[in-house]
Image (cartoon, rainbow, N blue to C red):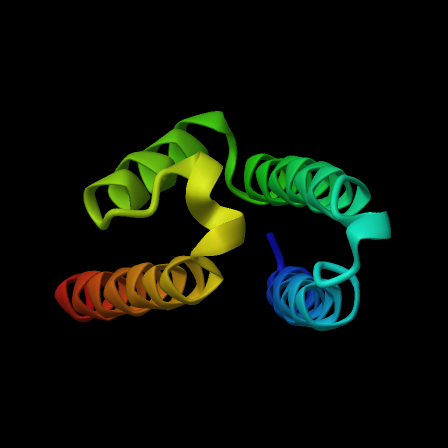
Length: 116
C-alpha cells in the first residue's frame, strides 16, 4: 500500500476511536440514567461495537491481508486485548498498533542497512 493510503487508514482509525469514545461518554452521561433508554442504549452500543469491529477488520484485511491481520489479532490477544474487547480497550488497541508499526519500521531500517 502506498504511503498516502496508509496515512488515510491511520486517520480513519483515529477518527473511529475518537467517535466511539465520544459516543460512549454521551450515552453514559445522557441516556443511561434514564429508565426510558436503559434497554435501548446497551443495544445501540452493542451494534456500534459490531460495526466498529467489522470496520477495523475490513481495513486491516484490505490493507495488510488475511495472514497479517491474524498475526495482529494474535499479538493483541497476548497483550490482553482480544478482538471482541477492542471497542472497550481502544487505548490498548491503538497503543499496540503503534508499537507494532514502530517495531516493523525498525526492522525495515535494519534490513535496508544490511542491503546497503
